[in-house]
Length: 112
Image (cartoon, rainbow, N blue to C red; front, side, top):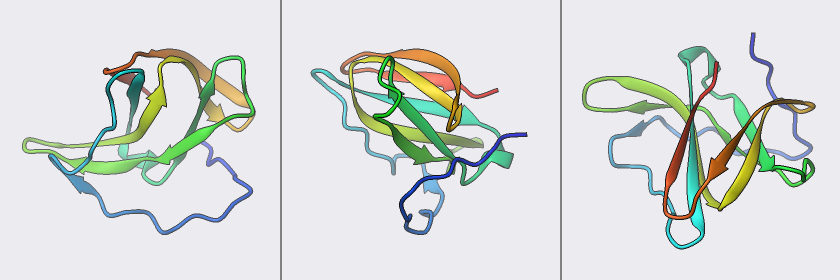
């Protein structure tokens, strides 16, 4: 079972599910993006990432349905991220894995 992160700040309501071509990624130069694929049960879950070695500087994004032409996928999209290695957090105090984000590229990770 996936646990919801708790954050010391309020959040706006979740955005509507996105459609193909409706998510804009800010990538290029030294900026990349990270897409974390999940299952439908994680809809609304906020997934945190931090630069590896700096556990206190975190950013997060909510998992949302993404309606594509042939199917729907659930994922969190985090963009832009300066290139480097990032820790993906399973819970606020439990790291899941580390991924490399490169400038001008989209890194994909499957949350399992």
